[in-house]
Length: 141
Image (cartoon, rainbow, N blue to C red; front, side, top):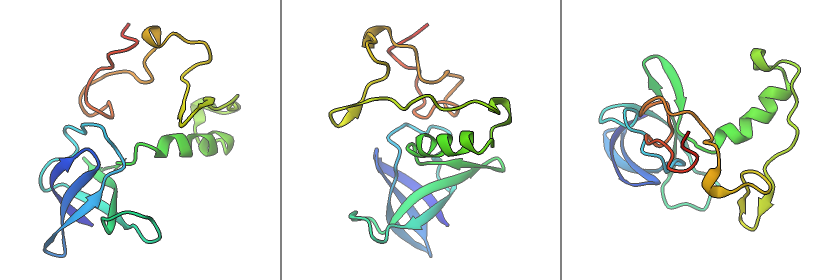
């Protein structure tokens, strides 16, 4: 467990670990306003076996008694498994039809969709609810 000190760029955070500053990888380019505040405890995992300069990766934090993931790739990896195992009661009996199709090194939001008229992938409720702390510019309702 480390203590958040500062964020020098989108993918790095300085934490205090065992009384010393340590650079950690942050797998989330979002703003995380209200989450990454000085003194907040961060869960760290060693980056063993990964090709990265920082020795640790920040994976989560406590926000008012609730564990919050700092890994923006986790929901896309977790959701299909949770859905298939019936771990999301309001979606019991649902099945994942398909994943977003790959397009080069990225993904398409919807086959044949107009990027300028794309619905937002989330609802904006405030700086903590949204991963990056800002309303989407595309797909505004």
